[in-house]
Every structure is written in structure tokens, then in C-alpha cells.
Amino acid sequence: MSSTTQQQVDLVVRTIAQAAVDNEKYFGDLDAVVGDGDFGYSLARGFENVLAGWDDVDRTDIGTFLKKIGMVVTARIGGTSGPIWGTAFMRAGMTAGATDTLTGEQVVAMLRAAVEGIKARGQADVGDKTLLDVLVPVTDRLEAELAAGADAAQALTAMAATAREAAEATVDMVARRGRASYTGERSRGSVDAGAMGVAVILGRVDEAWQREGAS
Image (tube, rainbow, N blue to C red; front, side, top):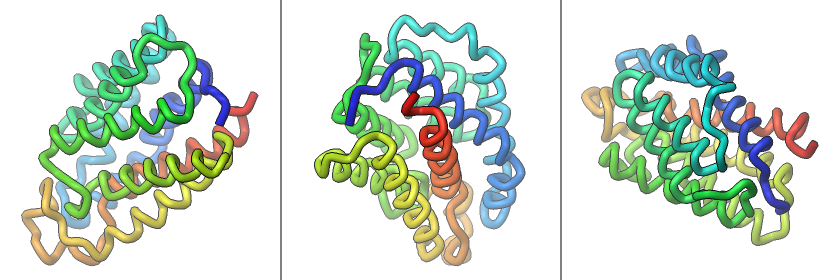
């Protein structure tokens, strides 16, 4: 996998933000099945702020850029989603550090750091029916694809497929964290909104990369 530039990081983050805004109703409908239904609204409002201030975000280096995005997300997204998604961006930025390019191994390390930050912030782990049930297998898939010699485009397509499979697999789980956990066994039979949100967003990132990322 060749190195990833600031411009490509911009593409990924902007695509994440736009996907969150575009899927507000869908994510909210998913969350309303056993949650409080505010996931789509909260995520959209937060990432609207990211897009509104897009040109003013500090791009001194990739680490600074991601930490600044994390600060906006934490401050602007309501409920539990803000701290969780904000922590993910900030931990990724801290791990990236002062660099203007990223190797595949660095991206894996950034995702691992984001996962650990989410675990600590949300007191959750794999199997609790949260977005971690997608993020962890997706990161594992990226590491495996890189070891097999895949380039960024190939790795992203593989990650998007893994994300969708992992999100759909949450339908058989019982929620142990968040508002959905209050419903107990009733949470079985529907996908986790956060997990599916990550899968949908990663699908959009894959599409954007195939269209623009390589250039």
C-alpha cells in the first residue's frame, strides 16, 4: 500500500461527514427500533459543523487535522455519540502525529488506537452490540489485506465488505451498552445502528476512493 497524503485524508474525512449528513433519517430509523432514535440526528448535526468549518480546520499535519476534527465532533454531537466519535478521531490523530503522509501500518495503528479509545470511553467491547463489532473486524481485515500486498483501493473494498457483513451480524446479538441495552432480549433481531452506520459510511468512503482517491 502506497503512502496516504493529506489530500487523501481530507477526502476520507469529508466523505465520512457527508455520509453522516446524508443518512440522517436512515440512521435515526435504525436507532429508533430499540434506542432513543437520536443517533442519526446527533451525528448529522455534528458533521454539519465539520463541513461548515471545513476550510478553516488546521492542516499543519495529519495528526493536527484529525485532532481538530475530533474536537469539533466532541463539542457538536449530542448524546453519547459525540464523545465516542470524537475520541476515535482524536486518538487516531495522536497516533498519526506530525506527518504529511501515512503508511498502511500507520493507518492500522490509528484504527487500533481509535478502537481502544472507544472501548475506554464507552466501557464497551466486541460482542456488546456496538460500532466496535464493525470497527475491530474491519481493522483486522485491513491488516490482513496489507500483509497480502493489497493497495489502498483493494483494501478499502475488502474493508467495506467486511463492515457490511459484521454490521448485519449484530442482528443476532443482545445489546449490552447504550439505551438499547435496557430492552434486553428485545434488542435481538435488529442491527445495531452504530455498527450499520460505520458500514454505510465505510461503503461511501470506498466509493469515493475508487472515484477520486488514487488521483
